[in-house]
Amino acid sequence: MDLSLSTRTVGDRTIVEVGGEIDVYTAPKLREQLVELVNDGSYHLVVDMEGVDFLDSTGLGVLVGGLKRVRAHEGSLRLVCNQERILKIFRITGLTKVFPIHSSVDEAVAATD
Amino acid sequence: MATVELLFSALPEHVRTARLVAAAVARRAGVDEAVLDEVRLAVGEACTRAVGLHMSHGIGSPVRVSLIEDEKKFSIEVGDEAPHRRFTLPGGTLGAGASAPPQAGATSDAKAKATANGNGNGPAGGGGGGLVEADGALMPGARDEIPEPVPEEDEGDGEMGLAVISGLVDDVEVTTDENGGVIRMSWPTTEPVLP
Image 1 (cartoon, rainbow over the protein chains, first blue to last red):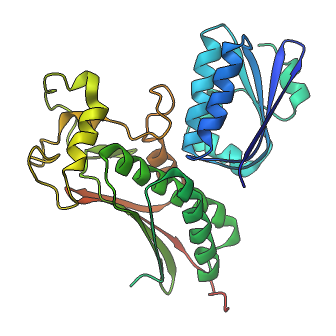
Image 2: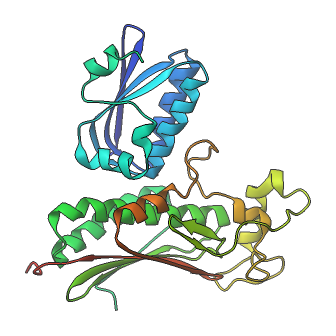
Image 3: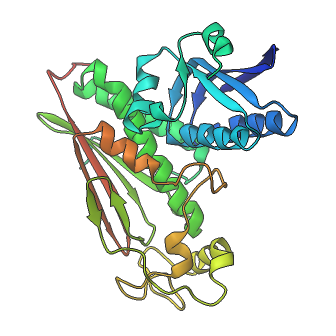
């Protein structure tokens, strides 16, 4: 299982749909994608993690890096995730306080705060 | 001896293999299905850390994973051969704080220095200009170098993996010395699953 990435835009938001496993081997690909989006001027990102089967601290690090990048441009990075095993990792690392986590892409796109 | 032992080259692409093997052996040993996700994540974090340490120290030897089935518990040991810097686990400090004075030029060139010294330094440590001079005097460059296959300072502090492990696993123990480190984790088992 590798990492799959696809992007689309909804209004001023860019949805990054992630599938597969985000670990030490695949996380650099996600990082490249996020860096590329920010470099191209997409500062409001929604990372849809519903298709993610595995996430470790390397993946968390990449998401934190993405958040820092968009914040440097007054942007936002929202996550979409309903999977308990993935949410648990955000919880034990305290990152639920850092990332807005939504239950659907629609909800994340509509969110403004 | 361990029920299953796994040696793999210290490369990121092999960490997934270690996760799969560990989860398979844990399942067979009778670790609860609901806990297998935690086993997978914890062993992945430990292996990722070991791979990072080997890579940043230029250590060519493999990462070692021992999967040990006992009567009432299943244990995993992940060993690296990196001469250890001090680090802290949430909830407890292992070793002293980082206070060694930087060598001239070490600050801006930590990675190169770590690699150069690591090359001439076998698992036993020592050697000319080796990483370990004494317990409290690890090479300044290497010690603060966060072993990160994602080479970017703002993406994780490299010890988030340890934080995840200690958040996940109740029974975890980390030991380190100049020859390397071992992360030991264990989980209770129920009735062993017969083949």
